[in-house]
Every structure is written in C-alpha cells, then in structure tokens.
Length: 154
Image (cartoon, rainbow, N blue to C red; front, side, top):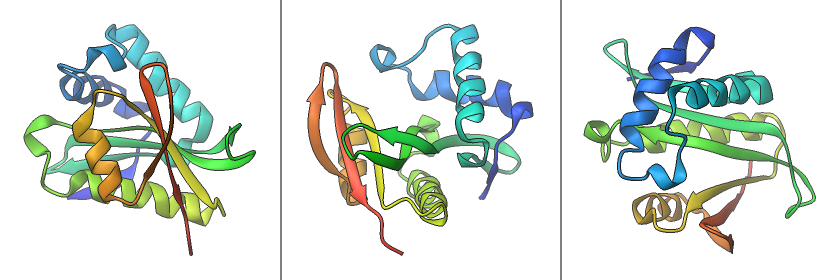
C-alpha cells in the first residue's frame, strides 16, 4: 500500500470511493456528485498538504483530510481537524484506516498542532469504535454529530 498527497487529478477517485464508503450512511454524507466534487475542492483549498489517498496496486481505496488551518472554538486554537476519513468497504479491517489516520496525525504534529479533533455521525458506531481504538475521546454531541478529540504528542 502507498499513501501519497492527493491533488485535483484525484477528484474522480475521491467521488467514487466516497460514494461507496458512505453507502448506508447517507445521512452523514453528500449524495450528489457535484457536491462531492465541490467538497473535495474545498478540502484541498483548506489544507492541500493534509489531503491524502491510499493506493493499492495504483487504485485509490481510501482518503483522509486533515486541516491544520482549522480554528477550533472548543479548543480555542488551531487544531488538526480530521474532516474526512473513508475506506472502500472491501478494504476495511486491514489497517488502512489506521495508517491513513496515522499519516494525518503525523502531519498535524509536523504543523505543531497539539490536538486533533473530528466529528463523527452519532449512529456510525463502527467509526466511533475505530476512533476510540486510536485514542480519540468523545467530547460532546451536536445534533447528529459526536465530537472526538485526541491530544497529540511529539
């Protein structure tokens, strides 16, 4: 498996993997291709170096987007905000998500962020368990979302 920075040429793969990854979780996702493409462009505009893609045999199987320019109103400082992490269903449970998340958190540390945070769907129990296994702690609810955070050390 290879993990590299994503760029605008990855937009079609992002859309394809996003749609497959969010099947059954549409309540937490964009569902129109145009909106997903705009979301990808927004992620790149926020922090182009924090958007990464996992490849197996040159095929995109997952993405992560870590925004180190994000100001958290909860932390009252810039954090490593993990806006997105998704893996194709057939590749889940193989450590790809942990590796992508690890790269994102490493990037946040390089940018001297002390905290990573993210929001996960309240009923997305698989993702909540995954983040808990990666030492994220739940820190409140907002509507259908659960805020999770993790202190980052060097």
